[in-house]
Image (cartoon, rainbow, N blue to C red):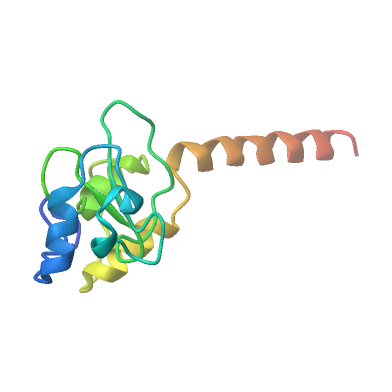
Length: 130
């Protein structure tokens, strides 16, 4: 099963989770919620802001990255786009949680490319001096 369909994201039923998602404005996080709705973890809820940079992408079940426009968690496909994955890439799994974990554990594509080129250059230099 492809868990990267555009609208694949957790649909929460817990009232407190829904209240948290509904109350946060772009750029706000857990600490901006009323005390009674705050969690023990400072950044577990983070409403993305279209006018600022994006931090680390991690498992949405550990840190809820919220859509800056809609009242929901970002989808796996959106998280993949943030990481720089081409649109044709898929995460094949039966578990939405596993898909988020795989994307969260990934090195951003452009960063991996820079690292690979640097390693290649270092190896070329090393072997050309032998």
